[in-house]
Image (tube, rainbow, N blue to C red; front, side, top):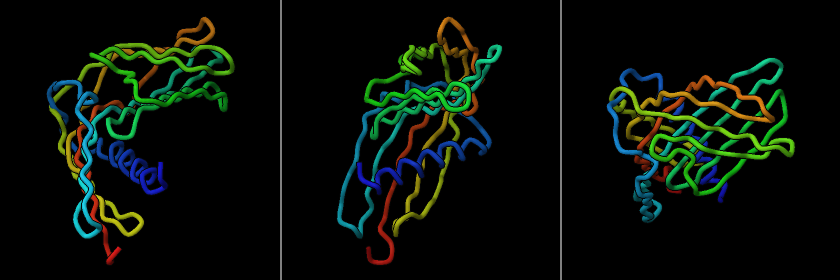
Length: 187
């Protein structure tokens, strides 16, 4: 993946998390992470338009001396990833194209310190989709992200080495976005 695409993913993820502060969340809609991924490439002076849909989940919890934090990111255009951090620095992760959230059921397993760490639970949309517009500039390009966020609620746990840790999710939302990129300054 090019550095420019990694930068775009970082900017879109930041816009997704930052967009949660805008008031209003929307009604249940079909699983957004199943939307078809599309990208249209044109000349450098005309916009490049990409459609992205997926989920963002971040959460943490602890039981006794075992603390955990998780990040789940699904993106119909750039792929999916899950990361589990136990304590301060024991990390496991996975990347690919397989969805972790299917029909409201979350299921993901990664290896952490040689043992399986399994995320599981149920999530559902709540409220109405929140409209977002996030402009940004990066590497001589203007990026404008427009679309919706839909808050997700539910119960999620992490099972590791016989311990089940309930997780508090914040943020947890589905997104459906159009990202329009235009070259600036004659790039």
